[in-house]
View 1 (cartoon, rainbow, N blue to C red):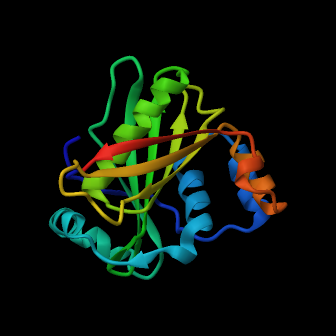
View 2: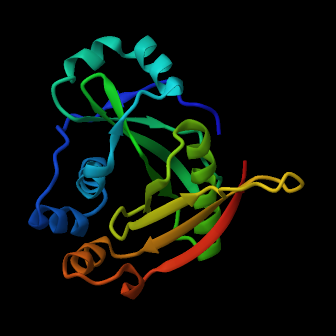
Length: 213
């Protein structure tokens, strides 16, 4: 995937949602605003500020005036990625949270718009491509991905955890291990978490993969 050169702001001020609002947005058809509010509410306490060199240089060159308008609140900017796949992926976006003059780092947030309903193997390949993009553009330990069908109704939430081995044998290639969990009902997922159920007891698809570094 090529790097992204242009950023756009969502109009919404990003805030942590209460339980009622979380359930509401999770039950609705996909929208960028609902998606970033849901993710931010889930992870805002773990985010930390650090301007990534890759994004900082481009942001200051392209949107310095826009940046100054939003320094008092948490905002969200997004950029299209170059990831498309004929017959499978129509478009994809990456989202970044911004507070004052710094990006809030720690997670990757993506949306992939699917051309049609996909089999599990196709979804796993799509997820792997997003992980590969994140390793280059926004290195992090967790990724949240929305898989959105053409109707935007029955979208899926994907939670990805990335782990680098602590020791690399010198004679072996270096790999990053990723565990992905695909939840086909975001509202049910949130209801289950609120009720104290473990993720392992919630209906989902899980797989692991390795990414060469």
